[in-house]
Length: 422
Image (cartoon, rainbow, N blue to C red; front, side):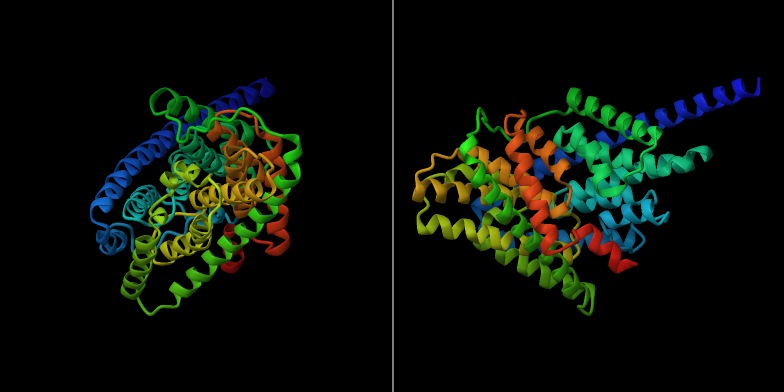
């Protein structure tokens, strides 16, 4: 009789946790999808205004960073958002670093950062907000507290799923970056949140971010795919070290006003001369094939400028108080790196490589090296391509990039921050 009672209680507890995962997944999808839609709309609107008056760029980032500072001071406890570190502390250190106000804080700060020109994306803002939804659900019911880690991971995985319509990538992201817990219930909670998010997004918000026509890949291109993976690893390290350097640099400045003024001026100047640095950079990725022609000195110089300056613009944005991370910048850098490598090899060696393939492989490889999560990157980019034709070359390049990046610099932006904090 006691055994039967125990099993009934356990069954009810599991059902309650899975119901909490469904609720977490649903709210996470709504948050991620609405943030994606409104950010895309207003970013396009501001870009259109800049086409007519490019000098507005010297006002827009200053305005955005100022609003973020004012909101933080008056509404969000005057505490700076620390991005992924907040989630890692909640999971690994059992810290209460994801209070309810982190949901609107990251939501609005991520939105304001990107639409006003900050050279980053909304992915990390979304991840922290949706992780906070999972943490909040675990605090509302006493017996759910022991499942806080699972619900936090479910929330952040649901957020990634909604942003990219990539459920496998969302699931893997939770385990590659945050926790490798092996309990069946933990896996079930994350999977339930991901599935719920995927269904909500698919039926109410889905639209393809990019339209890549991928049909085939060449076996004899493998050596050049490995080369792209090596170069992607080097670019990943450059991005990571840029972020760490500029965060430290801006943290050493005497006050917030200096950070905002100096940071916005740097961002404005960079975007004025290289407009593709504005915001997430997805508009730039959509136009990457305009660089598929023979690599003239002007084209090579333009692409190299993007590869060198995008990490700087991203790092300055984050250091000056913007909200975001390295997801979108990594995809941007990878797309242009892949196009440059393909164009040069085709022009000088007549290899006949397929540009769209190298663009997608480059996106996955740089993201893999930047966040040290190759399998997340593989399935995320396959979801962006809306097929798995390039699965094998993407796996090869992503693993090579991760290995190169780790060999040069053992930490990602996430793990380095955690070590410094400890």
